[in-house]
Figure 1 (spheres, rainbow, N blue to C red):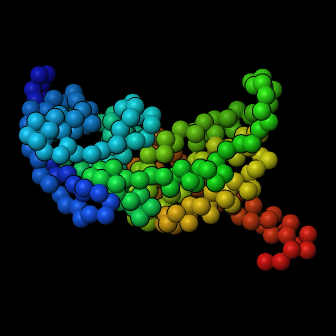
Figure 2 (figure 1 turned 90 degrees about the horizontal axis):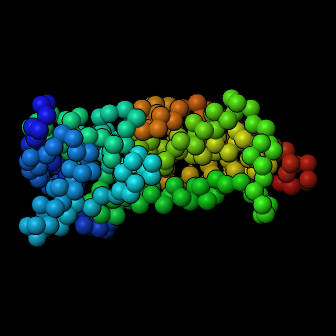
Figure 3 (figure 1 turned 90 degrees about the vertical axis):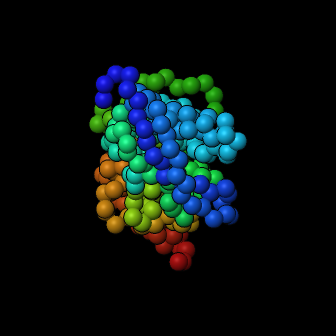
Length: 264
């Protein structure tokens, strides 16, 4: 597309006034859109025009608009965050589409992510999974020296890869089962790979997996859609790592109960 040329688009947007109301797709024309706009900037322009006409703007989540916070999650033409790999919706530019395109925009579809309004969903289930065990207990006081605890380079690299997860929920939205295994495994592995996370490693994975199940997420059946949709390219190998930790922790927990005379 030549410099200075604008695009004329048609948007099919999911509109739902509240979590308890019926939703439907509404069609909006989006003329004169710059190909250099981000997807969210395009929605901003559409909303300005709706407000000018006295209509309710389209509700959507956003914060940093730099691919860091994970708030901008939405389905764009059936793909989480849109057509570009390793790209959040806020980093997606309109030059990824063609003049005259019709774009369908809808919220994440998962029981554990109920719709709040339009494209906004409640992702507090992720927060509850993290609260169940996604932390390291430490003594308060002055900060320890950064080199006081040696961390092998391989473990540090893997932990950093897992820590790249921004909790956007694309993995859940893309999975046919609405599974949160990729998200949970990234949070479990991030701490489980580091020396500081070893003391609570077993209880962490047991509690976080249990909370994940309680929240109503589906099971993993190895479709791989989560990895393909993840804007931070979190790998499936973290799910395998979490499964191994979960099995080991369960066996240890059972053995400890048996050794102490417990039942169950």
